[in-house]
Image 1 (cartoon, rainbow, N blue to C red):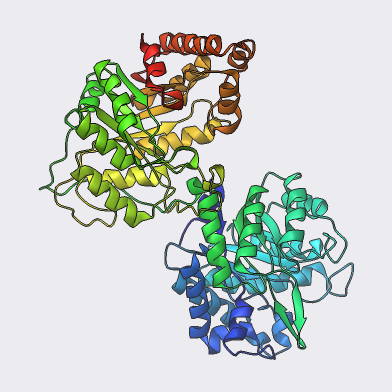
Image 2: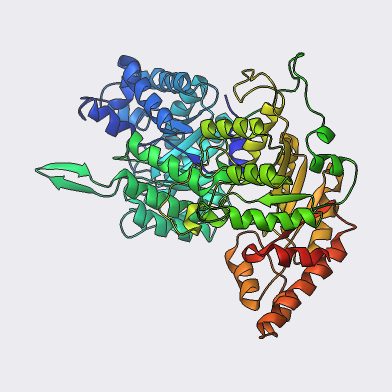
Length: 607
């Protein structure tokens, strides 16, 4: 069993499963049957549905117990089977889930009105919910999801019932109508405040409406709570076709709205009526592409290598690594790979860097989601034809785990040693926004993978023979908007095996100093990024359109005042030199970018 509170506290988006009833109906089980009773009579059918959703990418599955309470089961004369049905449902889901997938005990409304709108007292309602929750708890659920409630008084009793039995996390989900309110007329702002006050761990919406209306309600909910939000919309609104009701929305449509719901603040996303494993698969793909840093498979580095594996010491990995290990200041210049297939101009410019004594050439990997010559072949060409070391950037955006493993083994065979691991800019930033992103893992996961290879085995622990000898670097942003999150990710990168870090272009030395103070206990070499501006427009572009780059207002103002092209370039060069002088005693080296491929501009910073 997993600790669901750890999942709630994680900065990631998690995927729920989809409709159980829809899937059971598709298997020929008609609606005159009690679907909850199938946990006893047709457990293999229920098990197969759970497994299909897990295969599609669901990370949390719900038990088949939406209506498994005394009131609803009495309609099928099954009220004496309450415990058995709920217990069996939890066991079935746990069997499908194993240890890596979470099981949520599903509890729906009673189907009757409670006081003050009906004859059932709140004490009676709470007792009925307790009966159901006991069976689920004993069956081994990781959390409870109270779903499809319209009456806040009723969900309150469900919350109280679960709380009286255990301290497992509770996800409380209301359902709304097309006007955005519950059938009782309660607005999202009101029921959100109530659920927050009652201490549900995650609050959200499910069922009744499609994603469009749900999105509008979620945006209102986000304004009145800081708790994690969940959303499980129906597959659009049902339509009548030849006398039958169908949910018509495509998986792609649901995935598109999943993206919008996540951007609105939803951390737990799934589907309700009409959704299938096909919809969940598209949602999972969207989650992976949208939030790569929040959807990383856990890859663990073995603590000890096999006795016959000889690990390369850091100082022996490359000349670049040796200088850093010896405490020497290193210099590097970042060049942009060519757009076409002719590397001649780039090669000639790199020769200037070698002649000037620059230690290494940084080769970005599809920066800003641009289509350019690959970093791996470019790095190989430079090292073979020019004889200067490269720092090959490698991003997670474009390749799955198998492709990354193949690339890295090939890079090692070609003699490449220095690597800077980055997650990568999403395709929507580039000229081909419809291109798909992979993001099987993010930079943290990839550092883990490379560390595996450096220890002589792949991510599955299988030996690869001679280990790789990569000198592993990572990116870091001292001016991140959410610095605490950036620091947590930096901590994970270091623990995964990062050996040095390169910052985003530095335009605020004060902020860099604060960051260095926060990370000094790691004793990991930091290389400062420096970008010589060429114009005010260039400064504006970096400040507004390049993720992670923060240009201090004073720098923008300096560049704004200068209109002459050459004067602006000289001012940008002066700023870069000032920054270089301020940081050179604080860091282990600098990476100077060559704007528009002009390495001569970059070299002027060192002069």
